[in-house]
Length: 151
Image 1 (cartoon, rainbow, N blue to C red):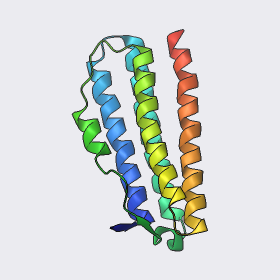
Image 2: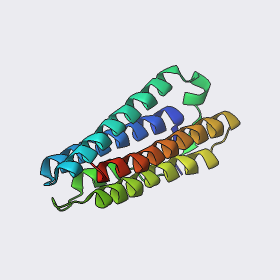
Image 3: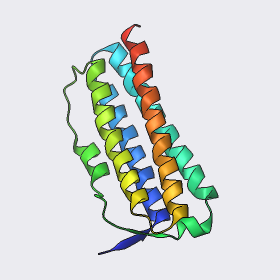
């Protein structure tokens, strides 16, 4: 069994957010419907903001948290899967929302698993709080997607 410090896990989650931002940019450039392009641009901005927020969090986190070792039981292929993902240019808003929910849920579950398996209360609480923030952001995305439908 291999282990990684929390700081490496957070860097990996940052990388996942950037991979999602790149995916949404690519899909936006390929999309044929204007509303879908706008939603994908919104999603890209959301992922960039999530990356920046997580990066700022990691910069300010206590060193004791960052140095906590986690079981390296998580799949590290998420960014590659985003790069290799191919979708039809005729995406509908519902398709984008379903994709975002699927991908964000994978990240949330990854963070929840890391929290659950954390060796310290400090790491467990920190990772739970971060996964809760991700869930709130996903909820906002779903709510915002309804606005795009009625544009």
